[in-house]
Length: 89
Image (cartoon, rainbow, N blue to C red; front, side, top):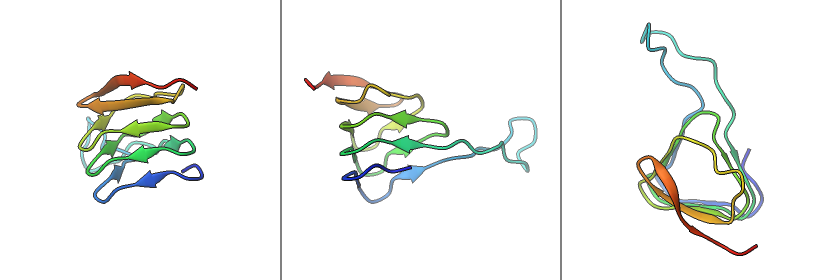
């Protein structure tokens, strides 16, 4: 799910399934990714299965998002991504 007004830069990977660690020829069951409204996903980010990003989340270029940031109203960046700034609602 991608919310209204969200912008996604080139090279972004939205990964909803992965390989089984026990058998690389098999995939794990997919998990939805939910991106809220008015988000901005920077160039070359990777968002992994099951991640939920709340409204008004900015993801810095090149970040790897391994967990959810459901509260939104923040800037996240890094590998793995962490909150680097929060906004007033």
